[in-house]
Structure formats: structure tokens, C-alpha cells
Image (cartoon, rainbow, N blue to C red; front, side, top):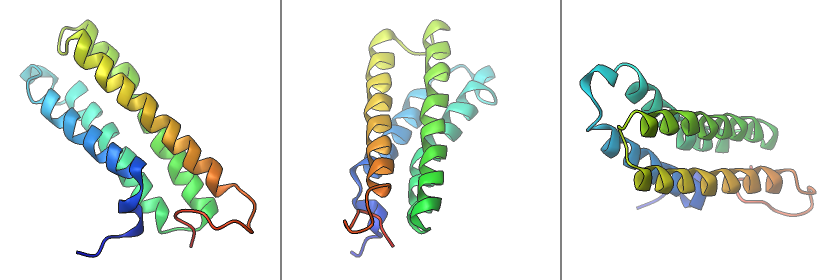
Length: 128
């Protein structure tokens, strides 16, 4: 099966897996939170790989912009998970694992941004 270039990026694959984990964990949240924190957390988590994918089809400058949006979505997930933990919707171990995932994704998005800003004579992943 042929793949799009962005599907080969580790950060994209990890972001997709993170979003899937968010869907699984939020399935057990209280019903009254489905239109609040569940919806917000799911949308933020989906935004991460979606912006990586969409940005990869653009110019390097535009790709960096989309990576900034993805990074913003990573940061948006942090308080949503913290509130979820404090409200008792997720336990400390789940929070720690998801937080570590976000930290890793954040570092990889930042590294990808940096690689796109490297001198033009060096070919970069995702370059068009």
C-alpha cells in the first residue's frame, strides 16, 4: 500500500496513537462531560496529527505554521488532562502516561520545525 509522506513521520504516527488513546479513555467520562471536556479533548488531540498532515502538503513556511498549530493543540491537551485528573475522570497513572506522550510529541514537533528552518542546501523530511 502506498503511503503519503507525512505518514512516515514518527511524530505523525505518535500523534495518531495519542488521539486514539484519548478516544478510548474519554469513552468512560461522565455523560454530562461529553459536550464539554470530552469534546474539547478529542478535538485538540485530533488537531495534532491533522495539522501535521495538512501542513506537509504546503510550502516549508506554511508547514511551520501548521506545526505551530499542532503544538498549540498539544499544549491545549495539558490543562484538559489536568482538569480531568483533578475531577477524578482519569487516574494519576493515566495522566502521567498521557502527559509523557504529549511531552514527547511536543519535542518531535519542535524538532521537525527546526529541521524545516535548516539551511536550504540540506534536504529535509517533508520538504516540497
